[in-house]
Length: 246
Ligand code: URA
Image 1 (cartoon, helix red, strand yellow):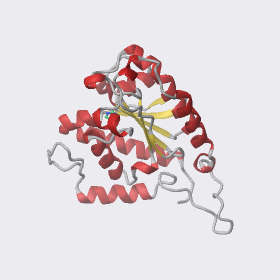
Image 2: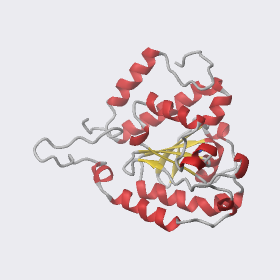
Image 3: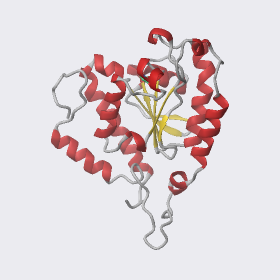
């Protein structure tokens, strides 16, 4: 269970619950590292060895970033400081998708580095992993002025690159943060409250939709729902690695 604390920037679990989930997550194969064969130093054979050790996702992401270039495909380029492509491991088994960069992200060129990002970091830590082991990106790669919602034509211009990012990485689970990510990938107008809590798929990849960290900062009472969604992410990662040693 969650702590009852309501500090708006907090995502702390009860210490026992945190320890329990750290142990559970450490037992989950692949989320952290794939084991190497003691004899050869090569990756041990297994269902996700190819994804973890191939350079392909990294190369594809690099090519995609080059293709996006100094993007002027929609009006957001006029007000952006930096295009925010994505961050994390190209071999990630788990990808988080948010909405769009905010002020801090636009300044630093990295997704989720502001207040919502610090909360996301704590959510990832509570899952027993860290930002460098997962991949984080957004539906829209440039900051909408005054953090307004991205418009339909901006989402339409940018989302094909998101789809290709995910295709390049081929994660085992997608965690969609908030309405925009969920509606864009699941092609629906239902809202996150209607969509979360049920298993869904994007092009065959299991999807867990949950509240956006920025929403969680304003509505800390939803922490329990988000934690239950993150536990579902961990379960799906574990199911994917059934029979594989760590
Ligand atoms: N909110 C998002 O959706 N993405 C970011 O990168 C930062 C805040």
